[in-house]
Amino acid sequence: MPLRAPTALDSEEAVQQLNEIAQVIVGLLGEASPRRREHSERVANLAAHFAEGAGLLAGTAPHRLYLAGLLHDVGHIGSPPEESATPGDEQETRERRHPVAAVQALSKFHGFAPLLSAVRHHHEHFDGRGYPDGKAGEAIPLEARILRLVDRWDRLTAGPGALEPKAAIDRLRELGGSELDPRLVEPFIAFLDSGGIAAGDFLARKEASFIRQSFSGILQKFSSGKLVPPAMPQVVFELRNVIRRQDSSVKDLADVLEKDPVLSLRLIAVARSPVYKGYGEVKSVQAAIPRLGFKETLSIVVAIANKSLYEARHPQHRVLMDKMWVHALACAYAAKLVSQSLLLEDPEGVFLMGLTHDVGKVILLRAFAELPESPTVSPETVLTAIQDAHQSVGVMLIKRWGFGEEFSRVISLHEKDELTADTHPAILAVHLANRLTRRMGLSFFEPEAEEPAAIASARHLGISSEVLEKIEARVKDIVRDVAHLF
Image (cartoon, rainbow, N blue to C red; front, side, top):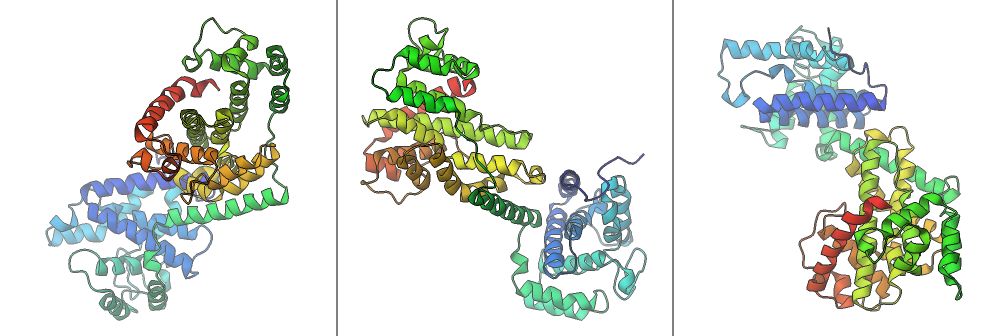
C-alpha cells in the first residue's frame, strides 16, 4: 500500500512535509553520488527561479517545479556514481530507465503526484527523439520542458569538460527545436543575463520574501494602532509608586505583591535561589523583600512579568522564545554586574534596561506566530527579519510602559558600535552586556573570540578583560540557577 503523505501543495503543513521528504530522498541520492545531488539542487533552484521570474508558472507551480527538479534524478539511487560508471549497454539502459524508476519510487508518496509527469518526461526532446515515451512538442508537459532546458544547461556548465558561459549559451541555441523547446531558450538566456543564475536557494528566497511581507504588515498594524502590544501588569506600576515613596515599608510592598499570588510565589522562588542566598528560610513575600532589597524586588517583579511575554504555542516559536528569554536575562545580569564593578549609579535600573533591550523582538515574534503560515519558515530567516525590525517596536512598547528616555536610547543603540566616551554609562553597560552574551554562547549570534576589553563599550568604560571574564562566569552561574524560576 502506498505510504500516505499530503496529497498536494495545498497547505503550509503539506509543503513543509513534502520539502522534508524530498530532502531525505535527495540525501540518499547524494550518499552514492554527491555530484548528482549537487546537480539536482542546482537544477531545482534555477528551474524554479526561471519559471517564476519569466512568468511561465504561477501560484504554487514554481514550488512544484522546484521539488521535481530536486527529485528528477532519484531513479539513479543504487546506480554507480557518474564519475565511475562504465559506458556500455548496461549504463545506457540505466540512463534511459531512470525517469521511470524515479516515478515508481515517488508514486509511493501521494503528495508527489503533481510532480510525477515533470519527473517522468524531463528527458523527452522537443523533436520527439527523447525518452522514455518519445513525446514531442507541447505534448511534453511545460514543467518537463523547463527541466530539460535547465538540466542541459547545468551539464554544459558544471563538472568535467564544462564550457564557458558564452559557449554554453551558443550550444543551447543550437539545441533549440531539436532537444529543447525553442520558445524557452531565449527567455532562459535573458534570465541568465539578468543575473538569475545567482538567485540562490529558491526556498530560502521565498521564505525571505514571505517574511518581508509579513513584517511589513505587522509594522504597519503597530503604527496604525490596529495591533496593540501587551501592557505591563498593573502590579508593576503600583510597586514602582510605592518604592518611590520615602516612607514605604516592607509591608507596603508585600501588600501590593500579594495581590498577585503567582507573581508572589515566583518572587519567593527567586529569593530562595543560590543567587540570593542568605540566612533563614524564605517562606513569604515579606521575608523575600528584605533579602532582595526594594529596588531588586522591583527588578525581579518586572522580570517575572516580562517572562509571560515569552510564550508561544508552536514548538518552533517556543524554542526561539526560550532562547530570547535566556539572552535577555543574561544581558540584564551582565549589565548589572558591569554597573556594580564600576560603581555606577542605579545598577537595578541598568538591570531593567538589559532585560528590556530586545523586547521588540519578542513582540514581533508573538505577532508573527499568529500568522497561519509562519510554522513553515526557518528560524534563521525569522530571526534575521526580527533583527532588522525590532528596535522601533521596542521603543514604542517601552514608552507605553512608562519607562524613561534612557530605556529608549538603550534599545536604539545597543547594537551599534559608533559609541563614544560621552555615551551614557548605562547605555555602554547594556551594549557591553549584549556583546558579552555572544562570547558566552547566550545569544543568537555566533560566539565571539575577541578579547572582551577590546569591545568598544568596554574601552569607553575602562573595564579590563579580567574583570569581564569574571562577570561572564558569574552570569553563567546565575542563568543556570534562576532562568527557570521566573
